[in-house]
Length: 325
Length: 166
Image 1: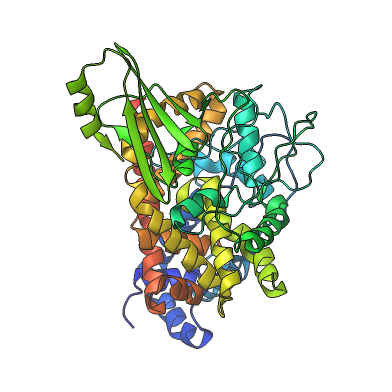
Image 2: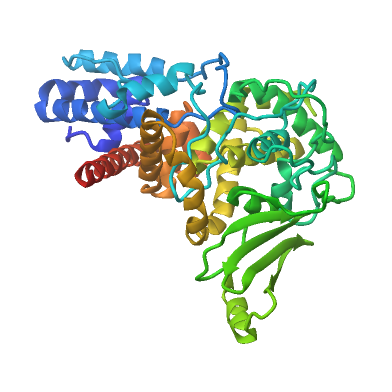
């Protein structure tokens, strides 16, 4: 029998070779030192790769007391035992899989201590290419008395943590159905559907919402959402108490606009704000503030660029031409 | 909602969100997509649920993917937000950095390889991976071997770069 190729070796190590096909493989391994060496190499590779992926644990909703969570069921212990049998039969020693690579060693321990679901600090602002959740800060005010922790409320808390004192931020949607037309707008609203009205009473400490702990909550939200799906689509805007725009983060802006955001090519924004359901991208110029405001209307993104008094008209026209997603 | 879907939810929600989180790096987005996926299951309860759920979810990620490529234009804004993270303690930053590097290494894989790897991490059998991704079962082992190799190589490559730079 020819040497084992990579796919076969991995299938073997993953315990995916049916028993009737094992014997010829084992026979080959017994006689082939090269394949035995490859097997050992690939086993180490798998352990390393596993360790890397396991380091990506889902962050809890708020950084505080760790919540004990159920370890997710994994098939691999059975497969590991299976692979061990194969290797033993081939005369190879078997080292337990699952060792994390050196640099991640202690961190994998730390991060994985809650098994699937971390008890560590808040979501990582990781790769610059991905939009991670906004940094979790200790919510200064949390909702009291409601067992359901909706996605909208969580965002609420994160916002409050950053802007204590600003009430009724614009991302709070009423408990109305997401717009039935645009799928993008629907996705934007998905996390906000079924949010109860904004309470204003005294704060209570927010428990850490590890993933396992919120599953039943999410199920309730899902049920509620389905119930509302038949209702006509309205998404009501809300303003802060004085109708002023409210600072928001980049991921929030993108969500508010249903998945995309326009910017002026070549300018660096000073900040992002929301007013009602529209997003304002504010640029500082020598003449004052230039504002690119945009909102979703009937599923289409509309924008307007407004300039301060005295701003040269031809420059404004140029900039308007440079608005891109 | 039917008890069948509720049972599906109880069984797979966590795993789906974890896979989506690893796939996208964004917990909010992961949960949004998971909710959307289950909503579709309510509308049309699937016969082979786990592959169906994960396939639909991965499709939703891909649909949004085109918009995601415009993220590079938003990096400028995003960097400003990241400075906030840089102020945290060294060991937190270290772990955050490492996680970032794993995510970057994952991004170096092809979409198919990355998805296969993440499904395997959720305990999928080769049969289920094949069913979810539309692969031939015989191709799963090869896909995973390539994905694992590339992941580790990409991670170590960045590690070396980092050490060289510091």
